[in-house]
Image (tube, rainbow, N blue to C red; front, side, top):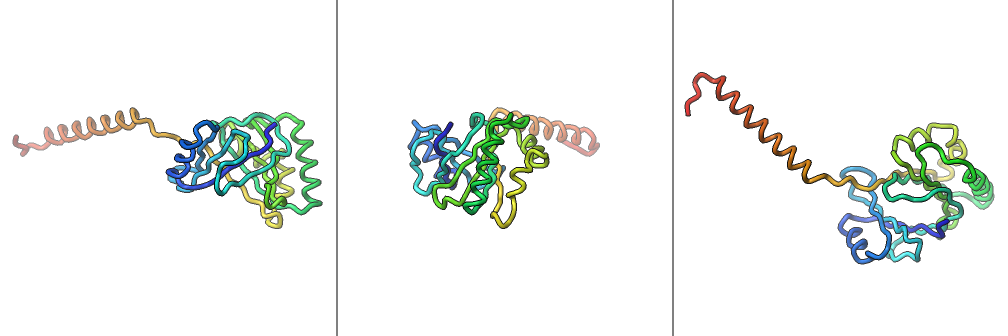
Amino acid sequence: MRRQFSVTYGSESLLTHLIDVYSKRHMVLFTRGPGEDDLQLVDLSDRRSVFVSPFTYRVLAQQGTLDEQDYFAYCFFTLDADQAKVFTAKLGQRLKKVLPIGMTAMLLMQKKKPATDYVVLTTWVAEDDYERWRKSNDFDLLREYATTNNQFHFAVYHVPVEEDEDEDTAEEDSDAQKNAADNESSDHSNPHHSD
């Protein structure tokens, strides 16, 4: 089981710079979607954070293994001491059971400061699997605490999809050929066309 989980947020240039500087660490860049400027950098090294402004969590329980290719879905809660005791006990029991279809890991984490903040991180093969789980009875345990009183919110991140340069070139070539064919076709159909 992991001991801690550390993330930070920022621009692509800043976060890729951190990846270069700390190349011996296992860091993964995540985005919420295409065109998003605010990216997330996750340090999967399980070592003390090197981020200047980190969000660091203590891992209380874990089932499964984190895979950087998965979708990372976070459920955030702020709980008082009594709620936290019941919540962590129930989640601890849940983590002893088989994970839902498509889920590769579930972590129960507590923020170092303030200690009232808890996160359930689930990782998924595909976002569709996560959406199905959110609507299923298996989500009921979290749904019970997913209230505005508990400042519940969630976020889903995934590894940015890089555009394939070969595909872009092929598309441009295809577009150029189509335009040339259209021009040639229109030239032949115009009886007044002259060379």
